[in-house]
Image 1 (cartoon, rainbow, N blue to C red):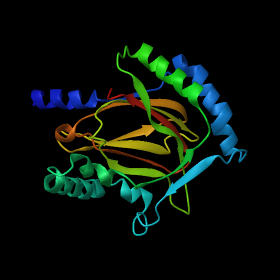
Image 2 (tube, rainbow, N blue to C red):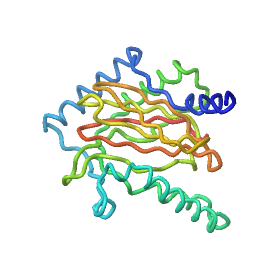
Image 3 (cartoon, one colour):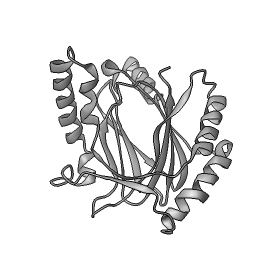
Image 4 (spheres, rainbow, N blue to C red):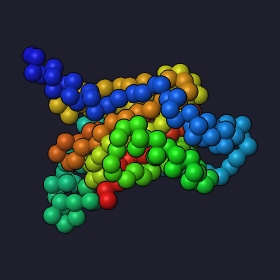
Length: 228
């Protein structure tokens, strides 16, 4: 029993929610001032909509983040990986895509992104180069469907992730993870304002399945370790 608990804690250590973000105050304040608040006030329109109506035709956004859908996608991914791995292993990750609802901002944010990457390298003592894994986006309702990103693993690009999240409401959004040791689902609710989700993506043999959902507005920008 103790050994099982230790393994569970080891998995939990791959998932951390950080609430004290004073160290990142300057770049986060800039993001809030230059993009997030103007967007909420309908003062900017430099964004692209990502919405696939076919995905949510028969299921709600919340349904797409259910344990049932996780099992379905895992079975599909395992099947694809076993049948095409010899041809092109990267193809087994294609079901990770086109299963989300969000706005992607097209504003130039190079200076803010550079500042966030620099602070993460210092704070977490990272030797590798960092890059943006997801540009700033807003998960929110589009055509009566709440914002979400469906179950995926990113197992073709393992490594540490840092996702800065800004919520307009308290506990209106969450990230979900599947514990690879026992396949139990972990739901991590997010607070109003800024928070940081820090987690580690595994390879195909040690995948960390995850998804996210919001019923209001959830802004996020993702940073990851570079392969090079």
